[in-house]
Length: 259
Image (cartoon, rainbow, N blue to C red):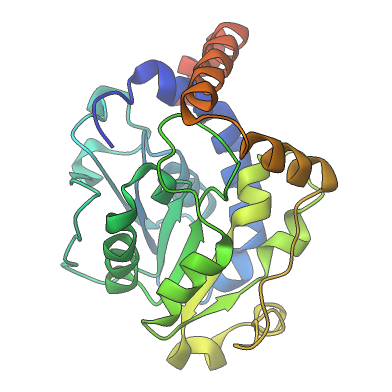
């Protein structure tokens, strides 16, 4: 990721992300309330999810990590809680957090950086909320769209187990952006599975069972069609969409102060 992710790009995604974060974190409360109230968001952008975590769980300590291109004046979290880091490289942990978050970030990194991102996440927390764009999802600068099982295997190499608690709950909730409701999987270090609250314990995915398909028929068809298009065309379409959203939602910048 680089400086090409300017303020307009961040503004165009902020409103939907803030709304989604509130809903997702509310559903995840049964788990978070059993953990230390702290979270690190790797690939935080303007800090929307970290800010939502802090708002939902009073007194929580949050940290956001992203590249030097992030405008610190536009952060939704205290700039003192932001760390600049090249996400293509592993980030050694200086401490553990209750929850690590990385949502729709991995697809923006070169394929060779995927294992380092997962290593960074598991180094920071025993519980990881993760999502990444699937093949055909499309978007600006998507260079590593992968099936969900690809990321699951990388987590498995570190003895982290998929807990598919959120997707069945969120799959029909159109207040949540589709990439979050179809792609978000909780990964938990195997030694901590016995500590999960009952609703999450019931969502542990057995090692020999693939992650279920949760996307709607429309979303699956859309992705299948986009997979057939040249990468340059997909990028152009994503840029047009971003410009339209920015013009349609001029109040997006106000979300920096009100979300």
